[in-house]
Length: 255
Image 1: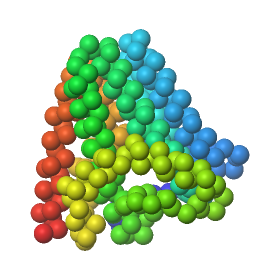
Image 2: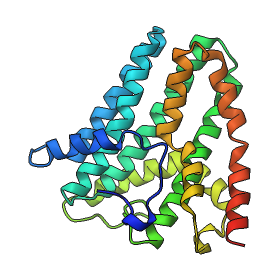
Image 3: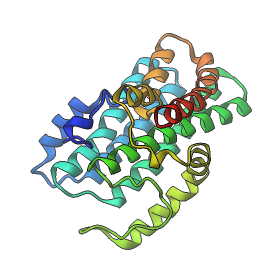
């Protein structure tokens, strides 16, 4: 099940794992497995990728990073198939992603013997890229009757949905704000009028989807296999400059 109605769907380059994710979700549809179980699966896959990277088993690293992307799509897919969306799953997913991203880049810094400062800059750039993509995607979904578990503005604790615990939502929301609050504020400051825009073309969303986590992990995987490890950190620092370009394009489209 898509996050968007058919007429508003675009080619999401970060969502290449969706076909396999759908198969996994359908296989688990009538079982006791929940979306949170699948989220735990992608956390384990991410940890295995980090361990393989540390020992410089780069093909295995790529496998587990791609598997993580697939499972990252499968948890939301299972939630939609079972018609059990939850803020618990939404925030657990996001908090897990940012923690894994930090340790992935930290491991790259360790094995490439690069600069810790540049690694932290790359991490910030990586998160700002993903935040911009999620910002525009959430706007698109909310404007066009799509999935609304991800809100445009995460300013206050949401009311727990049926079947989930409000205390768990409160805790995970607090963790989400701690991890993402600064990145959300920066992107909103840079493009605060985006929610008022009435048109985000498919070609534009496809271009911005290169900022999605799945595509970022794919780039890391390819560069590791090609033994370009030392260039991963500089790449993500440089690619962050496109944040400003995409924002200006968005403003031009909705001028």
